[in-house]
Length: 115
Image (cartoon, rainbow, N blue to C red; front, side, top):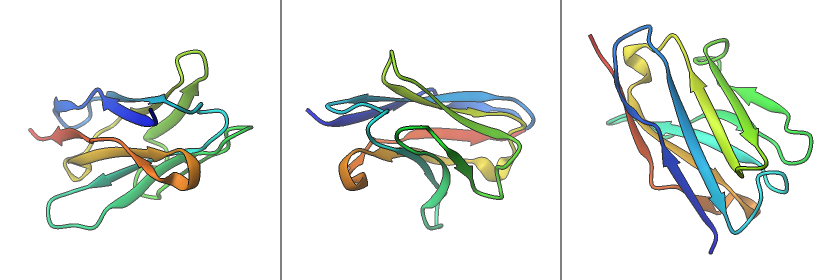
């Protein structure tokens, strides 16, 4: 079964860190790229970070560059999003997306940043 399952969301204060996980099944994170998106209430879904298949090149939205890091563990078939220096504007539901033609989506995990 092709599936992506996110975990690791939560509520934190500004400046703190969280690590999100995206566990893949039915395909490997080496053969297909993975993207992290987020969607805040009333806003469009935003592409946050991406790691390609094969060599695993990474790219980031300007809003998170220097604060977020995407990585993968081929043994665990999992992609991570390490988020540091969190800001209230990072509050959103975070989704991972990938697989063949990027057709597979996870269920989302809530990240809330507030003082």
